[in-house]
Length: 302
Image (cartoon, rainbow, N blue to C red; front, side, top):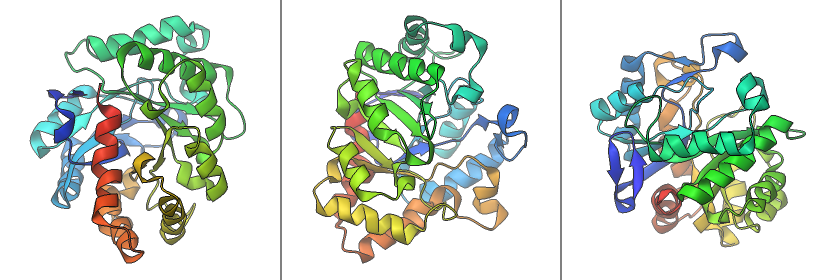
């Protein structure tokens, strides 16, 4: 079973799933702009409808406790658009951490995560279905980031909930995998995010060899890496047999990425642009279904 914002569902009903998205978000306290403020439900619903029209049925929404999470808005979007949304619990990068997170213990932070999963978020009956996006920096893990990652793994062990992470520019994936598994979590309940940004096939293979899952979840962000290169790197991994441990998404965290503003394809990028690139390279529907449907369902199942 999987916790969604409308209640629990059977893992077999998730359908095509975007593994790392933001639908209700506010990063303005750190980013100091309004581009990362998603508080217009009409706008978001119109963008989600475009994604749904291309076959997406579920979204793992990774906006956590210190990223402007709004589960009531998520429930509204889910009802209006007819998609399933899995809400999250977690704490993000060090710059976003409150003093209570910086000074709290692993056990105290773990208790917050468990409460959100088992009881409900922010006084609602909406329960988190994933822990994340818990985060680490590019060059090193800050003390509070390391503590949050350990707490996330501990909560995952206690609840059976999966953990999804933010690897800054795809880096420190091996360190995150080791730290999380050091707390006893099943590696198959871990998704390391943004690994496609590393553009390093050997490194990505090494991460997968630790048993965790990786997300190619910045599709469409071509200022970092072309989608053609992403597709080529992914093909190399698929040819080596890792199709059971890779997931796909776009990680839309700015309004300027949305279709409304005319420059990008927003939440539709994976289905509209990237899946055709993979098909051109010979990826079968069976393999696509693993990355888009079966892998998310297996990992989310509590």
